[in-house]
Length: 144
Length: 144
DNA sequence: ATATTAAAAGACAAAAAGGTCTTTTAATAT
DNA sequence: ATATTAAAAGACCTTTTTGTCTTTTAATAT
View 1 (tube, rainbow over the protein chains, first blue to last red):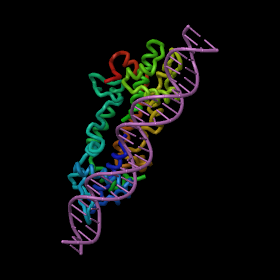
View 2: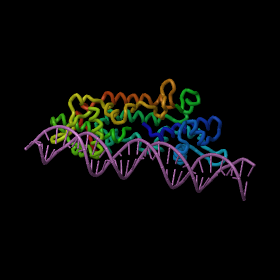
View 3: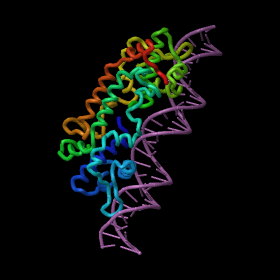
View 4: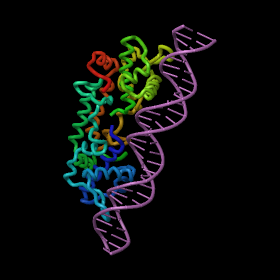
């Protein structure tokens, strides 16, 4: 459903938000990659993209690393997914038609659109903070 | 959402079923590729896969081509998608965890699973015939 | 039987996604 | 000021997906 890149992105962001809000500290790429079990350098590249889009913050140098403000905790999953997979993700036709809507639908438009819309609604309504809270509670997990 | 391969597969199958049931004839790969606007040889390869799985039938030689029986019209979208993208499509964790379920969920399991299940239900309940009927009515389209 | 036809099969190639490694930049502790 | 540290940047590689082209196989019309 999501690209690998997107999966790593979401897991990394949840980890960073949780950790950086817990101890008011910065967290390094090595730790992130270890804790979410993702390829280190690849994850670093993904975080560069998210950093440019100000979804996550970073500082270089000693005691540097990634961190997020509480304001950034309000960022929606859709913002992350769009930053990675582009702004048109979950907007296109299920069968790849360039134009597909009520006025000229593909054969599965009627069946598919409600589901695609539910996906968009979910991504729009879910923010990072709520997911990090569940992680902190221990009711959800980032690995295995 | 679907792979390109899957998009072409579904569009080709709907076209073949509609055409072959209309005129009780076989339809060639050239015509299929033209009519659904897909790459000819690539579409041929996809149909080879679907043919091996008996989702579509074919005969070689003069007046040969692809065709489908009414029984094959009862084939579900899920059968096509699984034939192409593998049996575990729309079964996995949204964040790529190898184990993710109610007993040990990823952070978005609760939000994601109902949507994934709706997708599976839709693919399970939609058969080729119903889509081909809409195409024949002129209420849906395979191109643009 | 044979020529013709059309799918099947297989070898290749381009593009995109996923991933690794090295060098550069910039922050900061000393 | 300088050494150290850690992210940023960039070169490169691998795998998968998508797509093309050629050859082979098999059906059938003659």
